[in-house]
Image 1: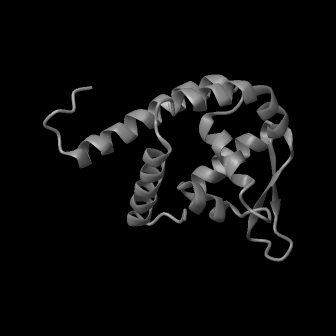
Image 2: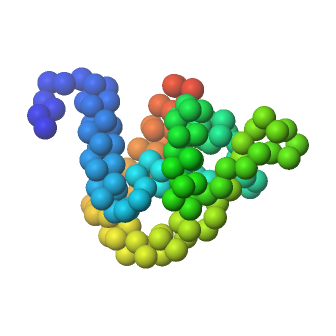
Length: 147
């Protein structure tokens, strides 16, 4: 990709899309029955102390309620999670991990470690810290909730 003469803001914007698409393509090949986005939802599920609602999950991962519901329904059919009604508020649907993802994560652990090592190869810790701070600020600027 030729970046000379392109404003850094536009170059970063384009590279974020390109990198995201390439990571998704690689990740989708790793799982037989779920997409990388669905796997990301399962990882995010562990960030909550209590089973989250569809709305809470959508806010965390940056997806609409409907997209989260669609992914969750697929994950439920595949046995990764259960969608249950909240006992306190019957209008809310909660996402509960079944544990299936843990077994698959253990099977894929070596490939995941290798991918991450390759992705971050020759990038200094200081550069990673700057990148993370920048991405957090960008996320805040567009109304994200990740701290």
